[in-house]
Length: 416
Image 1: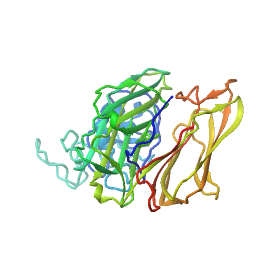
Image 2: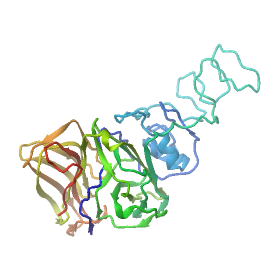
Image 3: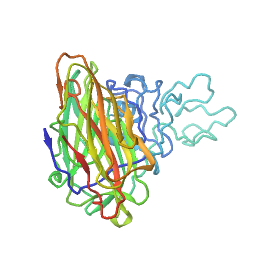
Image 4: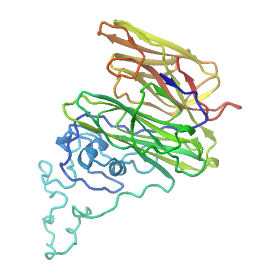
């Protein structure tokens, strides 16, 4: 197990858009969705879209199944603006992906890209490129570009890799920081293909070299992180005046955990994007809280494992989430004054709790975090990287200190 002491590197979160995962096999081909504008996406969560790609998936997973291009799909599925708003309609919509030929049941509007004009319009001369009167969607096959990324955006994409049926993989890739200056991160986004359990983007000067390939690595590796996600698609936006510092000599390291429960080979790949401003534009520097149980023994049967941590100064928490493995049945974290920080019963894709306004936790508060387990393996399970054969019990949070003299941007960690 490898632990790295927290450094002064810095970045993370608030306001999140997260969709559910189908963990389905990714089949190339299917409907051609193409690029979308900034207000809609042809890849909508919903059981009726891209059926070859699984059911009820997120935008990023539906898109990647068809396009096999994580960069293109992260642009198509990026939430416009700030505050975690999404261009993707809610799950269960019946709007077909661009390029389909079957309209929704009962509608009279022809599918996107057809040449039949709406009732009552005048058919344009053969060979013209004018769309039917009153329509606003260009014909399928046009070269409308995807939305232009922000000027101050740092984007990284891992090399794709195969995950065999039934396999569990941990892969890492390092990236040189190409911002070229000290920056303050104010928004972070991540996009993962189907089969992902979680991903981190770590930051440390030792990572500041491009490896240009993924490599096997340990799932018990922890460092300061810029974004953590256990969802296929996530957006984390900081409140005004808050950000995380990333110095120009600090590199990035992506760690990916994939678990393929299907009978087909899937492709693992991640894209992460960071919007940034000048450091002088923020007043507070946020940091991560990682309360771990690195020495963990889960006996056969049902049990509860708990630890405590004393908060050294006043903090405002913006984001909190649990991390357990397969035998975890319930997670609870609260202070000694009964402030609940996080509570949930999902181990594989837990939803984060977002605090707006932030949850203020006073100095000297004691946080207790605990995990309930149902271990029917007949063996004692220990802390480790495998979601199938090991266990974890971790509270992750994003906070910023508000007390005078507090160490801005310094993480609060309890690893054992």
